[in-house]
Length: 229
Length: 103
Image (cartoon, rainbow over all chains, first blue to last red; front, side, top):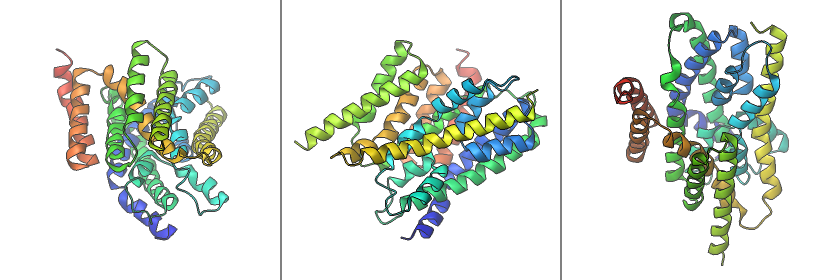
């Protein structure tokens, strides 16, 4: 399948997450308006950052004077799973020029990566994930705009009740990963047990993520060595 | 009120940080790809990352949040329908939350 056909497949396959992204985008638009961002500033943020969780994290600190370091750090921590998604795709983007990979990686997105696991071998992964990203970006921008436009109506809306929506969406991606990935389950089971232990020990959030992923990697390496004898 | 220049600097900073996480992981992977047997290790990473986020979220979740999560997992297991799963989970949070979490 050509890159173009794979890109179109990515766009066509994105329906489910197009809708859930839209829901988050509306909420982000409302939250951005409440934080004092103008319409074009919020849209610029959505277009250039393209990260729901990172943008929500940044809004927590949106007051004058802006704490640049804190914003950068919190966005980096929340977006750190992108590093793992990029690493997971290392063997999947071969056959493209370095320039194209560098540019198209801007649209790397969780659901695109997760759903790409169960695709036929002949689908171009970079094209598919980029197509998926184009559709999600369209959803993210249009919904941000809608949220900004209706923000005045929802000035008293308490978004606290839907704080848990992020984990729910991640759970849908985890289920797709479990069902679509051909990798063993041991690494992510080890990772989740480690995360729980660290959480009980009141470890700071970024260390929970870092150490539990490290534990998962260690388990994957040990398992791979055992399989190879 | 945040002035326009500060806002633009912050947005540029955020965009750079996020883009670096996207490109950085891929290029770290390129440096590791020559190691024998590394491919299945790298491909297991998204699952590890998702579980590292989910496990503590579930552990500290309220009754309605755990119920919502259970609905999402069950619906995804049976149907793979992301919209139905997310919609049901959200409905549980919004409708059942005030009753269940008051227990």
